[in-house]
Image (cartoon, rainbow, N blue to C red; front, side, top):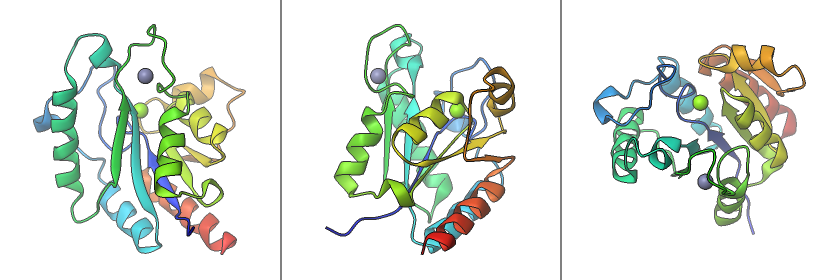
Length: 185
Ligand SMILES: [Mg+2]
Ligand SMILES: [Zn+2]
């Protein structure tokens, strides 16, 4: 079976602006970080497939519904056009609810890897939190920590955290990924 290479993204604070301490549920408030569209185009051109794995504990906390999350994702896809995220998956649980899908747990990633025949060794995870780095590295992906939202704090707070690359924006993350990819071919 032919396998593909993929970039898994975190959503809030990675692709779209995150207001600390708030939960985004209004499609009208989705704002991409400026370097994101061009960076994703470059990676798509190099043959990468895109996925989003997101923790949406606001559902489990009762702040909003899965329906609102789907509306946010429809808006996100629209803003990224013509680039497409092939599938967006999320954990709806609150942190205190036992589950296997809240990052850093890897169940959602394992399912995508199986379903799309993704080769972890040629693939990457990009996110702004410790949970994103651990999620990626546990799955055998290379993990990029974005310093856009929570990344700076998490690097300081968790000195044991060893992301494969630290990126100040998506342009820099894409350059790292494309360079690593070229070394692999
Ligand atoms: Mg995030
Ligand atoms: Zn979950």
